Length: 267
Length: 287
Ligand SMILES: Nc1ncnc2c1ncn2[C@@H]1O[C@H](COP(=O)(O)OP(=O)(O)O)[C@@H](O)[C@H]1O
Ligand SMILES: [Mg+2]
Image 1 (cartoon, helix red, strand yellow):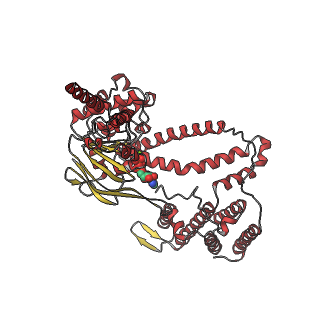
Image 2: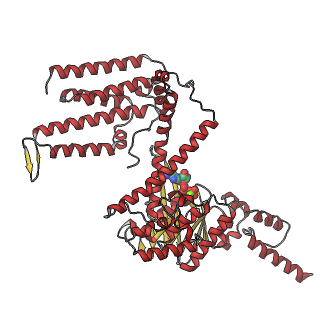
Image 3: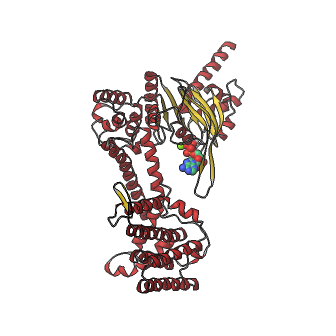
């Protein structure tokens, strides 16, 4: 389960998606996410889903990889969809005991499922192809104007980089602590809720302690290496290329398409 | 008695990169015996012992505890965990209760034992490990390094496992702390008469207490037998396995180079003392 998280999982590569500027990718991600959230029409969601699949194709990362690294979320969303399907109250289409399925709920559940999948696909496609360094650089540049109200964008960027960097480490550590607590008699599956709670606590507390001590070490190390929050230069050049304009143009087309669908086609 | 038969384990990473961590390892430990496992960092020691209590599923091979296969013949994995107690490296990182007493009692409570039984076991084990009664009501985080370590080990010992496995229990401790912990382990061993598996990367530390020694190198077993047999090995060979010989070994190999009749590798001070006394007696007899 711990392995099934796509955040902070950059995969080295040189696909079309990799070549895009990080800013473009983040804009694409925002556009896709917002569209998927805001529209409810079946046809425009299909449009979004198709674009997501296209984006995935452009990242040169296998569909299997996408499925594998998101299996947990996909199962969760399937589960949510199913709940939706069964518990929504409407005119009954199929009835079995207490549960029934209606044509309306079927449609709503299906739409929710498409939304989930689109979100998962874009998020992974961007995460897999953008390194933590690039993300932090974009964040730093974006929040630069905030310096006039005393917020240091470099601090925010560094916090994000470090967080992304340490997610796998902390997960690894959590796994180790779970194993160690199992070996000394913790019972995670217990009829007694209190004992289950205690077992979870036995993982949570040591994890918190180690995270804090790690954070402290890191802070000292940063200070020792003269970190002051001042702007720095980046090794990678950030420049909009032709590809970026094409990508943004396509995104604009998608927005127009979705608006058009919502205005003129009613499904 | 615990028996490992042809155990192998391979780690698989994200991009299907495979590391063979343990290859075809077999050994057995009788009740009341201590098995010492030696090997440098990365030789597969931790992987091996995590298979022994079922945390890692072996790629091939089986583990037999008192005639029962641990993967097939037990109700559930929790039963195996309580029969084969594994103390991880740096176990003090897993302390979490508000008092030392509760931390030692954590596993016992989960086993559903009666209060008086828990109380007496905790007191007994704490005593054995030199944690006196006024420490028991303190927070584990307020203890010294050595005390924390012993507190964490006590939590597993209290479960009275048939086999107690300790993964580098003395890692990062000073000499006094180390010796005290080893003395405590020997006390436990002589009182409980159960099997112990002791991992270390220091030969000196475990060679005298072990009934058998298993040496790992790159996941393979390169020596399995009596501690005495290890003394017959060439010192260069031992060095190549990462068993960094103690100073006394180096001194004694110089003595041997002078032409005196002593074993290939003298691994501990006690043994060196015996060998030197033997030499002196021989000298006395010829003079
Ligand atoms: N979680 C893991 N994932 C991948 N490889 C691992 C993992 N844990 C250990 N290894 C590899 O397995 C080998 C044996 O490691 P380990 O059993 O920890 O050795 P030891 O305890 O003797 O230092 C090493 O090469 C190590 O890099
Ligand atoms: Mg180890």
